[in-house]
Length: 151
Image (cartoon, rainbow, N blue to C red; front, side, top):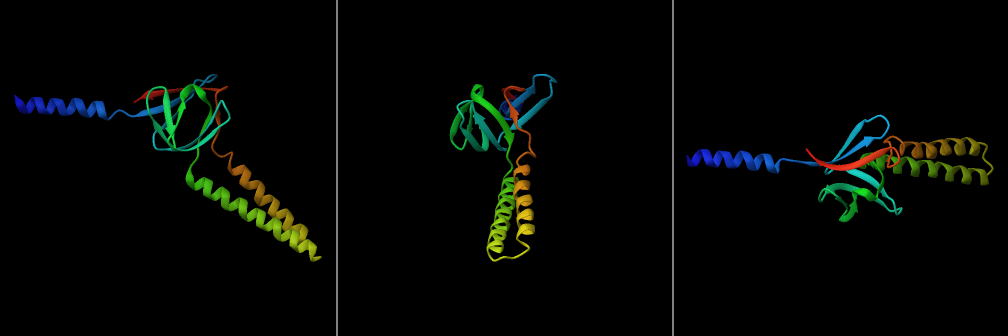
């Protein structure tokens, strides 16, 4: 009888502690659902204009925490995934493009004919860094509804 009680307590506690909290966003027009799970790196903009980037931790049903800063679920303006590798690649591409543009300026002051070509290539690389930002869609509050759920 004691063993059955222990097994029953174990199964009940396992079910209780295995629940995960997530942010579920629903498209207002189409009903499409996206889920943001804990410990994923995200970028959130709040209604007061602040930007929070970091790992998602959910405190309770109304509050989430990013980099030890609490954010209420009803104050979110937009949310998107922000993988660390994408941010690193974007920074490297931006710095490379700006370096090439800088080299074109140096070449132009020296009277080199390749300065325009360098400037064109550098501008293209720099613009592509901006395009990398748009890979992960920005989910704003005018198209999506946000709520915290337990799975």
